[in-house]
Length: 480
Ligand code: TXE
Image 1: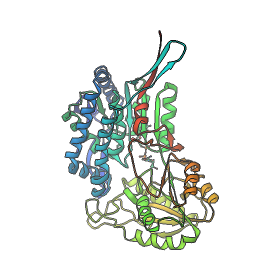
Image 2: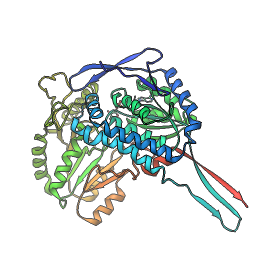
Image 3: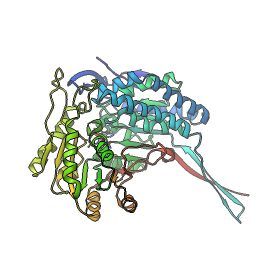
Image 4: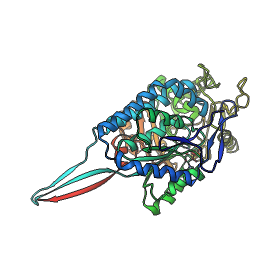
């Protein structure tokens, strides 16, 4: 059994109430460990440790903070294989993906923010003619809370923690209870890298107990959260009366808009990836595919041909393209949407069934699923499924597809395939999304703002936006 513990004040400890929950391996359905279901007492201890560490950490030179963050990054790289294996077992994602995306990107987060903090600057404003100068101090907030989901476990956990630490805050963090393993392992790496005790505290447990204790804690002044839209709305309700700073990165139902004038082969290969990477469990996946009518039939045939070649299998197999879904309840949720699609009269063009992987019969495997819909307002086209399921629909005019693309409650990202510059400019400005990719997908530059509009959240992560979020601007006006 792989049991994990809370990481508080640099020590690994059991939850005070000795309350534990099971941790499942999605590839075979087995319980392979237990994790603390921490209570508000553990969160209080983590908060006290963070609070005591703050006076020193916030005064640590930028060079020293940068050095420690970059050391964490190096140690993650040195431990790539171990972390990738743990991530793949905990989440069900192909080991190859964890090794090339999740863990390298987690390491990049620490390296990027370790470097970015040495370049971060604040403004000064000379009040001309008034003999006065204003300057802005960017001070750390204090103790902040970071709460992350299960789809890209260490990648999204570090995406919040690295900028919070770089700016001099101390952190109480909670990974998803569904995928806690690599966050637990990160504790050891932080100790080895010389991160002072109490600067980062990691408490494990359910959202309703541990997560709730973090968002309710009056001393935790900011919350950075990635997860479901309903949870985000709940967090906003709890945090608003306490005037906490909030960054919420929530769900998506992203359009992938394909015009006939695009680079077809490149579009086709990328669309397979943007549909099914990580079993479709990425908030940026393009789950609504709109295709210009003149190439609709060709696209449909070619796409299904490629999707058929995707290999659903055990995450550790090199030949696996699609691993296991993260949990049994999530598998059931995704399957329920396939039933909804049928009831709504959509055509299941491919997939829709569970897959039995030999030797791992109780794992949570599902075929990549392609659904042809006739009405963009149907539920499978409007609600976030967050699994290996995409919808196809033809369009004839720019206006029609733009309206359909924007006619959902979400607004995280959008992908556009065209070689027409005027159309590119028009769609880039009119699509209701925080991120628009043109002729590519999920190309990331960590300096860019990341986040969504509408029900996809508030605030932006990434680059200096994250450093701004984790600091409080204070204006100093000096008259001379
Ligand atoms: O997310 P939750 P779930 C979407 C996706 C998925 C749905 C639900 O559609 O099917 O959300 O997934 C913590 N106070 N996304 O149930 O519950 C929780 O413990 C404080 C999109 O896993 O939002 C976990 O650490 N924290 C998404 C984190 O919130 C609470 C990625 C996310 O869990 C809490 C994942 C509370 N009251 C799911 N309740 C994306 N945008 O990438 C829960 N949590």
